[in-house]
Image (cartoon, rainbow over all chains, first blue to last red; front, side):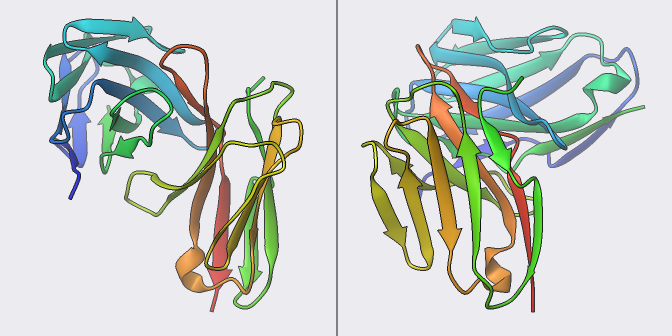
Length: 112
Length: 110
């Protein structure tokens, strides 16, 4: 059974904190993604990685960075959390282009 | 402006009713995917449509890709409470990106 695991379901952080969101997949997938999901806006792509140590900006990368040191793990970093980064964060992975994406359960982050 | 426009944004119906939701764009795509997201979970792929005019059925769900490959529809026959969720369409753009629409939130009342 394929699995994408996000380290936390719920997080509450203070403004200015550095926040790490972790995502691990056990399917040996090449591509991994981070999205944020907000009401009425759908899923917006923050960053993606098509291979180890490779990363590309998505549509809304400002305020975020990522790390992919190992194939199975893709981390999203909020360098200095702000209240407008309160959102649901979804990690996804897929084997290659034009294949099915598998999602984690999401991390609901609240920045106070 | 979103690349994919989904309508309606929200739909509340009684069990047993039929419904259709839409995913529209001005761009042409080589394929289009439909996902369903249940509360508290990540999206799960339902189907991928590839050929213009293609129709795919998944039990009571019927998916159609427009002839020009710019739009798609999802029709549910005799909706059930278990169909409740957020329905998302998605496309793979040039390169590695997958772009999603904002979704249609469906609520089926028993």
